[in-house]
Image 1 (cartoon, each protein chain N blue to C red):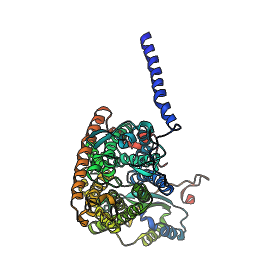
Image 2: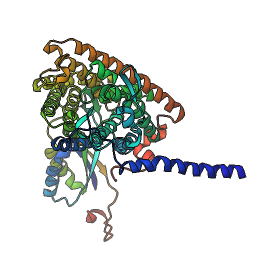
Image 3: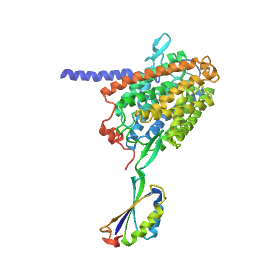
Image 4: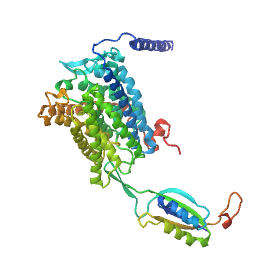
Amino acid sequence: MMNRTRLLAFGGAGLARVAVIVIVPLMLGGCTAVPVHGGKIDTGDTAWMLMSTALVMLMTPALALFYGGLVRQKNVLSVVMQSFIALGVITVVWFLLGYSLAFSPSLIKIGDYGFLGGLSWFGTRGVGMDPYPDFCPTVPHRLFMVYQCMFAVITPALISGAFAERMKFKTYLVFIVLWSLLVYTPMAHWVWSANGWLKKIGAVDFAGGTVVHMTSGLTALLVAVMIKPRLGFPREAFLPHNLVFTVLGASLLWFGWFGFNSGSAIASGQLAVTAFIATHNAAAAGAVAWMISDWVLKEKPTILGAATGAVAGLVAVTPASGFVGPISGLVIGAAAGFLCSWACTWRARKGIDDALDAFGVHGVGGTLGVLLTGVLASPFLNAAVQSTPGIIHGGFKLLMLQTLAVVVTIVFTVVMSWIILKILDATMGLRVDTGEEQMGLDLTQHGESAYSS
Amino acid sequence: MKLLKCIIQPHKLEQVKDALNNLGIKGMTVTEVKGYGRQRGHKEIYRGLEYNIFFLPKIQIDVVLEDKMVDEAVKAVVDNARTGHIGDGKIFILDIGNVIRIRTGEEGPDAL
């Protein structure tokens, strides 16, 4: 008894000591001198990147609205919470560990090809106020870190559309932390870090077609299958309870996406303008294409179709936005509108309850965009594809590299996500019990109702 | 006395209310209801998938009348609620045992 008490006391003191050793230096890191990497800060670039960071932040609550309107009244808060809390949880994870794993100099590498960052930037250590030439030659490194944080936040939240109306909240929290560290950060390292291997071989992804949309969309398909359909699917109709929310959410996503894509120029010059226009045009063409598809196939032009089409266009243009002109933007958006619309009906026919079509929109749209980048990328707009232009500019190599990136992303994402989900299913359980599902997740998971009376 | 339970299209409520008012009918109770009849609902489309929605929104008007008023009132409802399309609704006519005005305790037709 004595021993155990002493042990506990020691354990407590030990924890406190660890906390002092770990946390205090991290806090001091904020006031002691930070490393200088040279380079001069450009105020115009910095202003645009601050703005872009805030724009991308808005996308996560926008996603909450987009998804929230699509579910039944009894589950709207649970869906909104899944997006909103990602802003909290993933931000903490990102500043302590995620950014270091994703962007610090490769710890795990083969030759010059990096596979995972190390802990050298753990807790923002070494991430200073000076520009960092590899990522952000004219803005403070810390700004780049918080800009990237917003990407890390929205990505796991995108998956939540797949398991809407039946996921256990506690398991969800653990899932997004594990998924962010084991799927998102390695992918970000491969594609965006200084010597990430996919970047080194020449595959391009301007703002996250692979890292953000393919990873989340593919995981969505996997988790929809693993967690099984909602009770009553497909016999009962699960109808959207407020499409105005959904359209407002889609519109705010469109707005925030200017920060997502145009901000990925990490500067406020011509490249940002290229991405801005491609982004806008793809959203517009996506909305029109999906509306036409609904009109022709189902006799009515639906606003849910138009809103979803805009998002599909935005997803597809994400990897391409810094490489393509205005007309290519229209082409990408239109292709996404038609293809994603077909994909959503396909998965329903297969009996897969990806409740809010995270796969049909992000998985399919992201893959399409990564491949179309290999077709449409212009060496006149972006020097990064000078030696490997897209097919319409006479090069075939880029499409091959993009295809390789697609295959790698699919295999890596599916394998890692499957492992994470299997472990969570066996330990915590993915799904709420039947009674809770019938009563609704708002009451049973959160103890609240969205609408009184 | 009779109870008229009129199930009508929601957008016809104002017109029917005015017509009944013009007959000198002094009150009614209106409820938002859902239901289906021979038409068995309608079709809605979400992301390319069609759903059959059985329960459509309707308005139910409950109005209690003296027997002699029934024919006139039924005619007023039918004339004003009819669009000629499927889904115009129905009128159910029931006998009423008694009516009591809570404030004064009056009973029967006096309480209407």
